[in-house]
Image (cartoon, rainbow, N blue to C red; front, side, top):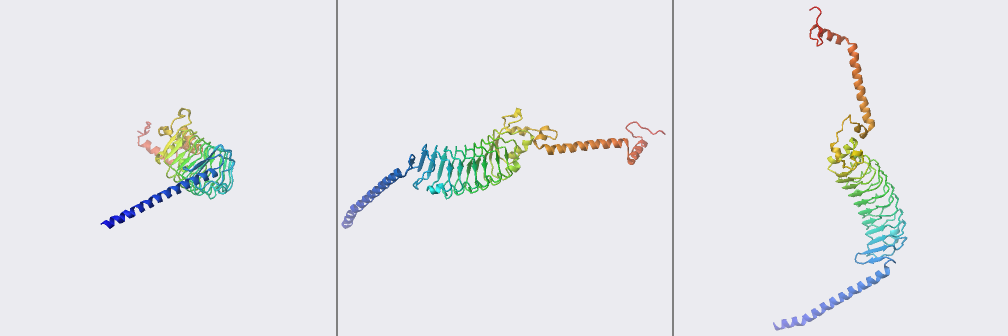
Length: 367
């Protein structure tokens, strides 16, 4: 008993001393790493930029940069360039600048006018790209190739008036796309090709008047579509949205919708497909500003002049013309046969007279 207790007493101070030494060395190493990292950060942070180690973000605002900063340490995964002078992103620029490790990139209000081909080549970790409030006017085919992990792309408040086919073709992981406040007037077939995982598409405040055939064909997973503030007059919902199997909400506020019988079929399509929608009428004048739900109470008939304009003047006018011709032909035939009865008709009249049952008071002269 005594020897056992003595051995414990001998071992305990050693164990305790070793533990304290280990903790001390651990603390020293941590402090050294922190100091070294701080020293590196001070040296490697781009001139005029602010580097936040714990975010980890580099903010370059009002620094008059003409190109993206280079040589950023790998632990900085977020780069925010705001109010600078980066007019063009050149081919392989991010790769050459050593920015392949970035997860988010924001180039906002920096006079950006063009994206060259393969500018994002190799940037496979980027999940968010924000190019808001610049001067982009054209998106070329393959403009975003290389962004294999991108989930959100914000291109709002630019001057985009042309999107080439396959511009977004490489963005199979994209979930949110904003093209708000641009200069788009038409959307061509292939514009959104390849965006098979997109769930939110916003096209607010453009000047869109028409859509090409099957423009939304690949957007099977979109649940929210915002077309507010455009110049849309009429929609063929059954044809235009047939590929959007999961659409839940559509915004059509502040467009040029004419709420007549020509638009009622569109409203009925959304109602029958359980698509929540908010849309307002632009005309006729008495319905301006009202919800297009008023179409639910609109009675449409063949004689309705609004129907003739709304559904399609050519086809309706042809049908009405055929109907009028048939009526005129029937009247002519009736008059002709009344004036020139056929042999069978004469025999019928004779028999009728002989039977003495004429409703006009015709009697048998021999009676």
